[in-house]
Amino acid sequence: MLIRFALIPCLLALSLPTCKKSGTTGNNANSAASASPSPGASAAAAQSVAPLPPPPPKPAVDQNAEVVIFGYHRFVDKVRRPDTEITPQAFEAQMQQLKDKNIPVIPLQDLLAWKRGEKAIPPRAAVITFDDGWKSQHDVAWPIMQKFGYPLTLFIYTEGIRPGHFSGGESMTWEMLAEMRDAGVDIQAHSATHQDLRRPYDKVAKKKLSPPEYEQWLNNELVGSKQMIEQKLGVRCNCFAVPYGFYNAHVKEVAMKAGYEAMFTVYGQPITYRAPNDSLGRYLIEANKPKTFEDAVAAIANTAAGPAVAEVSNSTLSTSPANGEVVRTAMPLIRANISSFGQIDPNSLQMRVSGIGLVKPSYDAKTQTVSYQVTQKLRPGPVTVIIGGTVGGKKTESTFSFKVDEAAAAPAPTASASPSATKK
Image 1 (tube, rainbow, N blue to C red):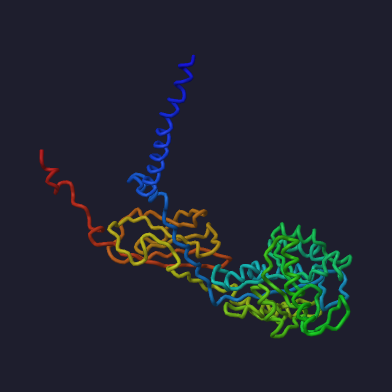
Image 2: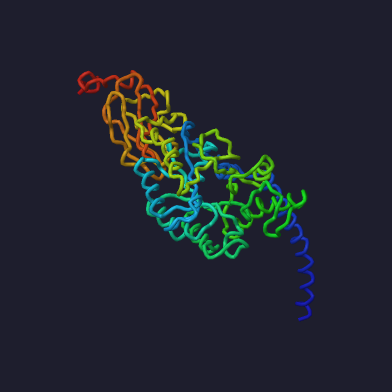
C-alpha cells in the first residue's frame, strides 16, 4: 500500500514536463499553421472569397418624359367650399378620364427615382396626391383609387390628425393612416400646423415669434412633423408639400436641410427630368375651377397616346452575343437582359433577327431575360436583333448587332468528299 502511494508523486513529476512540452509544441504548431497555411487551405480560402458581381446597369430613362401631379383635399356630396372640395362623382370622372386618355398614374416615389436616373417611367404620366388628412380621403376617395388600381400619396399635417390641436370629426386618425400605409399608400409631410411658414406666428400658442423663436418653430413645422410621421408610422418621409404654396428662400433652405428629397408647391406645371426638386408644382383641383384638370391633361395627353417608340440604349442591355461581337457559329443562342425596359408586358414581347424576320423568343420573368435559339443558319456578316414590347402602354424597343464569321457560315464538306468516307 505504501509503495503504491509512493509511486504516485513520481509519476506526477514525470508527467508534468511532458504536459508542458506538449502545450508548447501545440502552440508553436498553431502559430506555424496560422503563419503558413497548407496549400489545400489556401486554395479553399481563395475559392470561398468569390468576387463581387458587377452592379446592374442603370435603366435607360426617357429624359424627355413629363409628369403632371394632381392635388385634392375633401370629397363631399354637397360642395360648400369649392376651393378645397369636389364631389366623389366628379373625382371618379377625372380618374376615368386619365384611363380613357391612356395616361398612366405612377407612384410619387417612382417620379423621384426617375429624376435620380434609377427608374424608367412612361413618356407621359400622372401622380395623385391628397392634402391635409381629411376623413373623406380614407372613406370616399381611396376606394375610388383602389377601383382604378392607382397609387396614391398623402401629404398630412400632424396637428390635423386626430387627436391633434386642429383635428376634429372630419379628420383621419393615425390608425386610418396606418391602414392606408399597410395597403401601399405613400404618406408624406405637410407641416405640423398648416400655416404660412414665412410668418413668425405660432397659432397654437397664439403669439408672434421673435427671430430665435421663429427658427425653433419653423424647425418643428418642417423637422418635427417629419419625425412624428416616421416614428408613428414607421415610414421614410422624404417629401414635403408647402401649405398654401407659400414659401421663400429660407423656408426652402430649411426644408432641404431637414432631409427632404423634394418640396412640392401648388403652381401646376408638367414636371420634367431636370425640374428642380425644391419647387415641384402640383395642379390643385377645385370644384369651381374644372378647367385646371383639363389644362393639365391637355398638357400631356397628345403625346401620351402617340405612336412614337421609346428607344432603350443597347448599352443598358446584357446581350449574348455582345453588341459588335464576331461569332463563330451560324446558329447562336441570342440572349438579352431587358430589365432596363421597365415592367414589360410579356405577351407583347417580340424579337426580330435580320435574315430570319420575326421570331417568338422565350422570356424568364424572374431574371427578365429574353432568349432565342437560332434554328437556321445565318448568312455571314452583320446580324441585327431588334427586341420590343409594351411598357406602360408605350411601345419600347432596343437594337443590337453582331457579326457571323464567314467560316462559320460556310457549308460543311459532304460525306463523299471525306477521305474517311471512301476508305474501307
